[in-house]
View 1 (cartoon, rainbow, N blue to C red):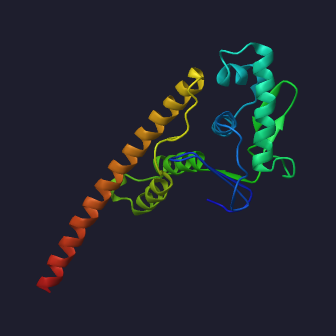
View 2 (tube, rainbow, N blue to C red; view 1 turned 120 degrees about the horizontal axis):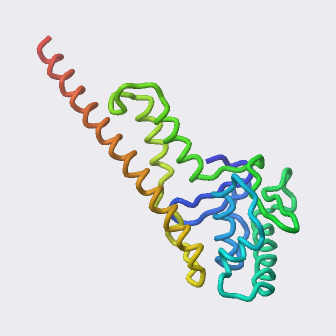
Length: 202
């Protein structure tokens, strides 16, 4: 992960670095949850009412919208969004979106990108492709644990459902990658044993 800009790690424990240093303390978990959701779902702008329903489903709308404004302020302070150029967040009166053009890295996106690169790499058998084995090793190095393993938002069932779905998908991807790596290692070990046997006969 790059030390430049913003580094967001959601695989395993929640961790955010700004310029290689741990980000300022988040005031509460809802701000962390908001960052995680916006970063993973960065392909589109999110209406404020949708974010309110995600994180404060049981509060009256006015109170929930106030909480969202406070969470956004806390989030921006923690990641240094006010001084970032370009900013990490696109914020309007009606929507919020993570800026994918900002200087950032997201371990989930990198993990998925590496697996996708392996899937589209031209080869007949994954277990015989050394470049893909190297890529899968990089991907598994990023998988420090389950998605948002230590971040719980107990009073927000919609967010928890979203997090569980992401966690299951990423976990399945990690298991598949491990299976391919195991097959590659097994084949590599068999080849090495065969080479040693041949060498002893020469």
